[in-house]
Each structure stands twice: as structure tokens, then as C-alpha cells.
Image (cartoon, rainbow, N blue to C red; front, side, top):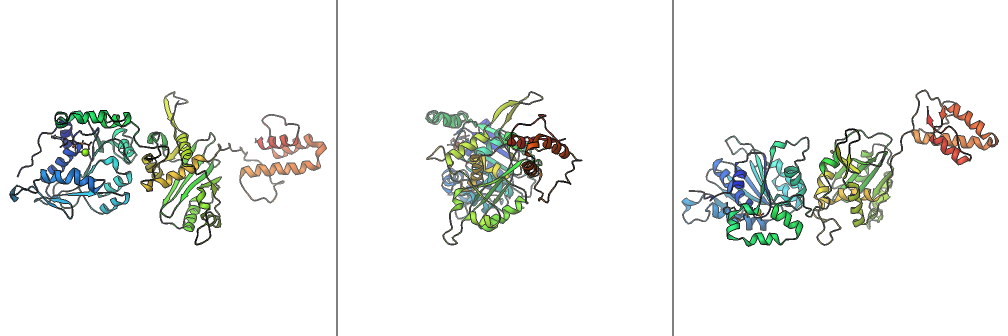
Length: 516
Ligand SMILES: Nc1ncnc2c1ncn2[C@@H]1O[C@H](COP(=O)(O)OP(=O)(O)OP(=O)(O)O)[C@@H](O)[C@H]1O
Ligand SMILES: [Mg+2]
């Protein structure tokens, strides 16, 4: 009973020898990735009695065409002489069972949520074939199942193998982890290894099918770069290639009180997606929080939002215009239900194409230099706090719509809610926050302060202005003398030293004044 692995090429041997937690063999087409991944799975199954291996592709059809037959042949499942059979194949459960108790289970995830079927299961080894066709959510969910199954008696550190080409819905997460090596604090860089693959290294193809290289050479330029040379930087389907974790994602900090805050949301029963955004004095946007919850009826969504708002003031709450449509059964619109919960929505522009362009504009990376050190810097007008995990996950995964390259593909649908909320914010007009007016501690306003509600500094200043205005009506002919006196009593001083001739100027001047 011998496993005939033939001759492996150097990169394939490197793949087989790697023992990191996440091993990715990727790049150009035809390098021999699937071939060696099948061999590696069989070697593991034979060497580690009882090991549980999950081999995944996106669809059942791909699984059948790329692995079932080839594995049956490699493992001699259909050999007439049963003694030569290395493993048996169970069609109903799609698994190869080895006499030593090891198993290679074949699986597929047609839809985003199909991956949940593997939750709660345990595999020491998981192989994702064509990993860039899987979403980050699927990858993350699978990592939960990558653990000791209890059947393997030997010591073994669970690991995952990936094979892939650039492009596809998972391009961004694979590129981040294995090419850009742009890690979160919770990720250990040494866990990840990337082995680049090129068709030229596959002697079998180069000798027996040299035309295959010509086929790749004739592809459109960008696709050729990706599929022939394994270039990961080529724009291939990703709608926001400008998104770069190292530039756009930052660690949370406390938002200064005087920054204006906005909310942008998208509501559907399948997902209530909300972004909380603060704008600094220069107009830089910080997305500091998010809500991403499914199965909330409108009133629950409104209550959830209220609880996140914690009584803070928000300048605008942008929402798509379809929330103003009346529900046929209740006669009420989503907008009205939010109003009943004391949340006033503002209609955002809903043109998809110009909306996505606006998002691109906000995300655009500009090169500059550090003010003090002079070091080159990359900046963008929008920053996302690292706690907004859903936005950070969905944004780079958005793909171009196949029929309209200026639009985003609406599949996988799960990715589109929070990114739509971002679009509603980006098409809306926001202005930089105003610097707060400085106030001296000893400032005494007791005498003149009427019984106004305390609305904070800004309104207080307006009140002072109104107060002055009201008083001035009676003291028209003694304006300047009166105002000087008043200012002195209020302990106000103008930066400019004098005030304009007319009434409005004077009012503006008073609001511009600083407490000293
Ligand atoms: N070491 C090898 N010895 C013999 N044949 C090989 C070897 N490596 C790969 N091949 C053959 O080369 C062909 C292409 O290999 P494979 O399908 O594994 O490439 P791939 O990198 O997975 O391609 P794709 O990028 O299209 O998925 C297959 O017919 C495979 O059997
Ligand atoms: Mg392959």
C-alpha cells in the first residue's frame, strides 16, 4: 500500500514542509497548488493516525471536478484489489476514511452562511482551496473549528492551508494577511507564511501543455499580471483598492466634546447597520462606532440606536430615502417609527454611482510629510476606529458589479449594509467642527444669567448675544459706550480690539470674542 506522490517541485516541497499555523501557497495559475495540497492532506492522514482534515472549495461542482476524482485515484479507492486501497470514499458524507482512523472530509460553502455548518466541529487541519473566493467571515468562522478533535493522540498544532490566485471576494483579506502582512494586535506575524507560485515552475505543464502559458499571456493586461505573474497589487474586482488597513484603521481615542457628530444608517430586517462619525476642526472624519445587528423590527432598531446615542447631540442622522415609504400594512413609514422614538432622520442622496465616487474621495490616500520629523506619510480624510470590525471587514471585500463597473456588486449581500451606510454619510455635506470658545474659570455670570436651560457653551454665547441685542434696543444712541461697559462686566475682550459700525457686525463680534 504505497502513496505515489511522484516528484514534487521545490515550491511544492516548501509548502509540504511548512509548519506555521497559516500556510498560503498562492499566485499565478497552474503552479501546482491544488496538486500538492491533495498530496499534503494524504501524507498528513497517513502520518498522524486519527487526524481530522477538512478540504474546502466554494462549490460542490468545483469540489467534484478538482478533488474527488483525483483523490480517489491517488488513494486507489477503486482498486480491484482491496488490499491496495489506501482509503475508502464514502459518497454520502463525502469523506475519505483511512484504516488508521484519519479522515479527509470534503466540504463546500456555496453561500456566505453555509460555513456555519462547520461551527462546533473540530479539524486539526483545514485546507481552503481557492481561498480568495471565500469571504473573510467564512475564513474567520472556520478558524473556530481549527482545533484538536480528540481523535489524534500525537502532539500536533492545528493549522490551516490556503491555495489561491489573486482576485475574488477574499482578495483583500488574503492580501492583508499574506502579502501586505498588515496585522492586528491580536494576530501573530510568525503564524503566517506565503509561498509564491508561478506556472513556469510547473514542469508538467511547461512540457506537456506549453500552450497554457500562451492562454495566460493573452488575457487582458491586469488579469494577465495577476494570473501569469501572480501580481497581488493589480486591481482585480475589488471596488475599493484604495482601502489600506495601515492608513485607514486607527486605535480608538476619546472624541473631543466639541467635535460635531453624525450618524449614517441603513435599515432592513436582515440587517440594521449604523455608523457613528465625528468630524474634527479640519474636516477629518473619524468613524468611531458601529451597529451591525440583524432581525430587529423597526421599533427595536430605533430603541437600539437610542441606547447607542446615550443622549449625546448629533448634527444629522442620515438615512436612505426609501425609509420614508409607507408600509402597506401599518400605513407607517420607518421614518415615522424613528420619529416616535425621538430620532429625526435626514434623507441622504441615494444615487449609487455618485455615492461610491464620494466614498472613494473620502478614502483617497494622500502622500504628505510628518510636520515635525519630515518623514513621508500616507493620510486619508476618513479614519476608522479598530472597534468598527464589520465596516473594516466588509469595505475591502466589495466587488465591482459585473454588468456595471461603476457600481458595487450586491452579492454577497451581507457585505452591503454597513457599506451603504458609509455611502450615505459620504454623499452628505458635513463641515469642520468649530473650535470651542475658551472660558475662564473665574467668569461670573450670575447677575445677568436668566433661567435658561443649560445647552452648553455655544448656545450660552448666543444667549449673551440676544441679551445684548435686547438691551441695545433701548440704548441705541449710547451703543458703543454701553457695549464697552457691558463687555467689561461680562469680562469679554475682542481679539481685534474694536467693533464694526453696524449692529450685525457688533453681534458677530461679540460671539467671536473670547473669555479672558
Ligand atoms: N509535481 C507535479 N507532478 C506532476 N504533475 C503536476 C505536479 N504539480 C502539478 N501537476 C499538474 O499540473 C497541473 C496543474 O496543477 P494544479 O491544478 O495543481 O495547479 P493550480 O496551481 O492549482 O492551478 P490553478 O491556479 O488553476 O488552481 C495539474 O494537471 C497537476 O496534476
Ligand atoms: Mg488549483
